[in-house]
Image (cartoon, one colour):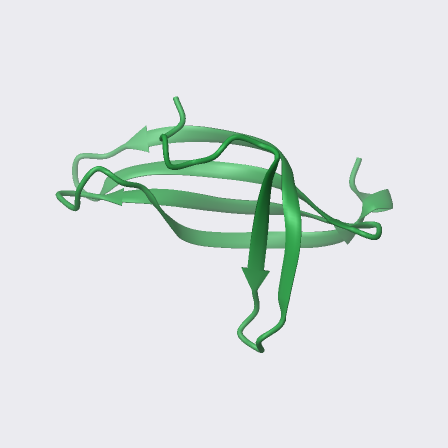
Length: 90
């Protein structure tokens, strides 16, 4: 089951690089798994396919976290993405 804070696809996304550059795209596919822990809080791990248009796509790995004792809302915690031209993603 997906946390209510995680929107359904398709959904818009913006990734900002430390250099001030940002990419805007659309998450077109997503799979996720909810993992509950007793020591650190609850996590929702995701793998997303993002379309940036103009033959540019990426696969993003990330997770949302609900801190232990920190309320009932999940927030984006970490992400890593692999960017490839559309022809390289099958």
